[in-house]
Length: 117
Image 1 (cartoon, rainbow, N blue to C red):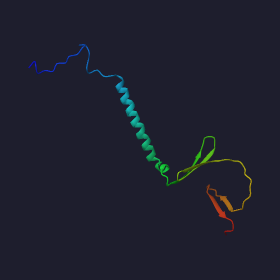
Image 2: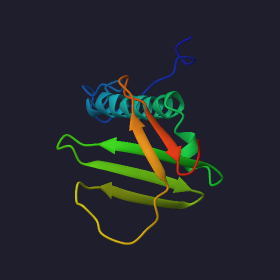
Image 3: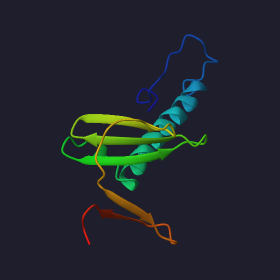
């Protein structure tokens, strides 16, 4: 029976073969964190339906208002994205009158074209 047992010959007798590197646990935690972040990003994209932003056939218009009150209009048509900043400046130029806009007490705006009764 003595010959059937496996014998391990180690150069140093006090070396433990089952000892692991302490940094391997930290590396595993990092991998778990990366997988969690990728999953969270995927969940946010599906929750806010942001996949439409990546499609070249969709047309999207978004209005953003910053903390300082500046308003931006972001328009996406196909692959072209256009950002316009809205300002309070008065403009001059020539044009024709198209109609009249009325603001109701509930905040709605009604446009009445010129010449309609």
